[in-house]
Image 1 (spheres, rainbow, N blue to C red):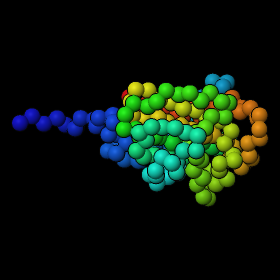
Image 2 (spheres, rainbow, N blue to C red; image 1 turned 180 degrees about the horizontal axis):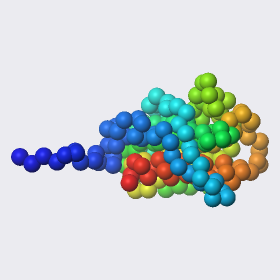
Image 3 (cartoon, one colour; image 1 turned 180 degrees about the vertical axis):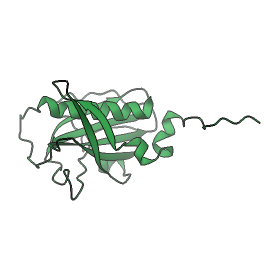
Image 4 (cartoon, rainbow, N blue to C red; image 1 turned 135 degrees about the vertical axis):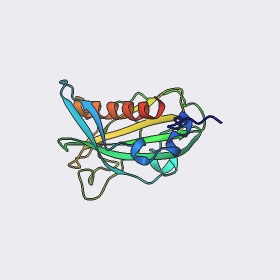
Length: 177
């Protein structure tokens, strides 16, 4: 009998279920600002697992979505906030078709008593989507911690877009790498 220690890493498709929440959504993730300065994205809270229809906006079409995982992060200055939603799929993700400046994405998860308290559906300004051949699609929604709402035609500042993109890429990479 041969034993492998430590045990082999769980298959990519099962990591969402086998890893603890702190492994899926780490307390801190590194990032960079548009000027190249380092920043840190800090976990504010993790939402309970939910059905896909409850976690993603009405325009999101993710065939085979079996469940959704969401967490909200802020950056070190606590000026920006972003919710990352992981869609766990039963098969490969569909091709991305939506290229709007403010993409249809995950529903923001406000966390009471902290910098994400005022972050809601009307407050997200930028979003990103990350997917590959694996069974995960990561969508993000980012905005300001002060609760200012999105106004039609508003351009997202580069730092806010960067946060949305970096979180989507980092979380997708953790699950699939």
